[in-house]
Image 1 (cartoon, helix red, strand yellow):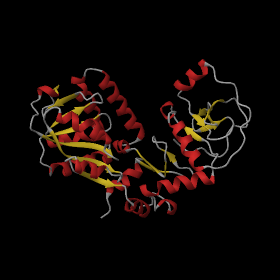
Image 2 (cartoon, one colour; image 1 turned 120 degrees about the horizontal axis):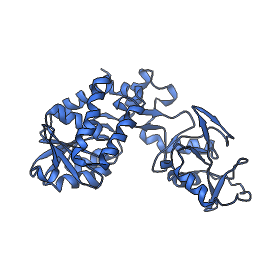
Image 3 (cartoon, helix red, strand yellow; image 1 turned 45 degrees about the vertical axis):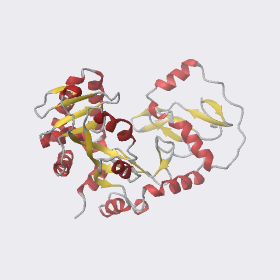
Image 4 (cartoon, helix red, strand yellow; image 1 turned 30 degrees about the horizontal axis):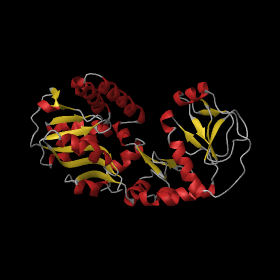
Length: 353
């Protein structure tokens, strides 16, 4: 029987496969053929972003009211979205087999899954924040500072959206729970990217259970379901480097779309990645004037997308650039009207960041 989660991942755009020749840029600065946003299983990108906003606002306020504010929204979505509701039911079934005393989840995306599973299991929930503070909410919905919850000697299942190399566990979640005298006895995640996180967690004493592992079989199943084309059916994490090099060699000068200001730091990493692959050398024309402070400020704060051009000066338009190691990094302000892009296009279609 085919895993329904595979269909849900593609139906909600939680897994997106890049168009041919347009790989995604990851935060690390590396290229990859697919992108995973597990929180979209909440129903859609729009719904997930709305809950992330609620989580951020609740984190900034009274943390003893955090659980009530966030779970109130989750409860509404459970009633409205069959995919999300069925996913939580599957996670609850998996967690029910684990010998634990409470559920833990870490800021931010873990809460999409840890809170409703804890409620369905009738267990308390430990909300761990990025500053390593935490709040415990008991099975009756009463929240208190975690230090007052008498968790010493107790065991938790930490529920996460996604595991890659388990860095958040090692850096934050495990130390936070152990600081309360408790232990993360096991972990449950929706997706394992199969990049070493499972072994790291096993070595740390909290073995990982996942509903989906990113392996070739996932894309084969998606192909059978008609979710992806023949060209994408053999995508695996191990093919990332080959895909990256192939794309860069075939189109070394293609610009990269930077979709938000949070993507701007990726530009420098992307430039370095491209420089290591592209050997084409072309002289740089005389540089444009250095951007003034007003423009630099607006570029950092602008909600409008920009374009990072990996090599050479753009042939036209008002661009601002700075030289770095003999190459140029460019940010071009772009105007969007709905989905229609206006203004001069540099080169071919940009790759997404």
